[in-house]
Image 1 (cartoon, rainbow, N blue to C red):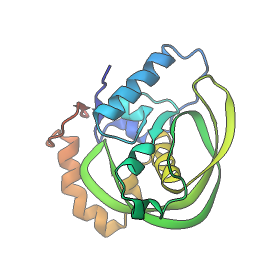
Image 2: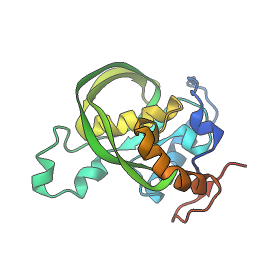
Image 3: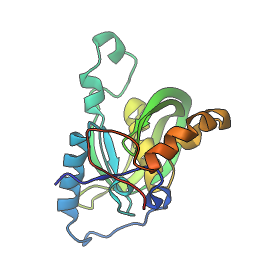
Length: 192
């Protein structure tokens, strides 16, 4: 089932999410709904707060980014072909590598894209959908997508990385989004 995406201004997007257990109600259905919602919205990642759930769960499919790249651009990234993966109860263990800029957007903040600096690699401790525990290091564009989604479960948004002047310049657009004055081709829920 395709779920509505929580728009900027929704309190759940500023919530530090809680861990869940393997008996979380309808977890497999929720994960399937998240995949369906992410793909229907043309996203490469989706975190539970974006569908109004305050739990530490996100899905990513960084393979989609590489599918659209030409061969020359692919040479810039070390994580080809990308991954499709579920992350439950993720916690960062380590950040490494230089910070690098990439133009990010967010399904909860449509029509706004900005350059954000993030580390080249992240080591995460997390559970997969079978609740098997993993500690794994991710690099490149995959690490960036993970860090973006991880921020969601920590109550952070990509715009939090912007300099104050840039934030002021997009303030009106952010207010419009929170009031529902934005047109997108996917379902959204707006703050009351």
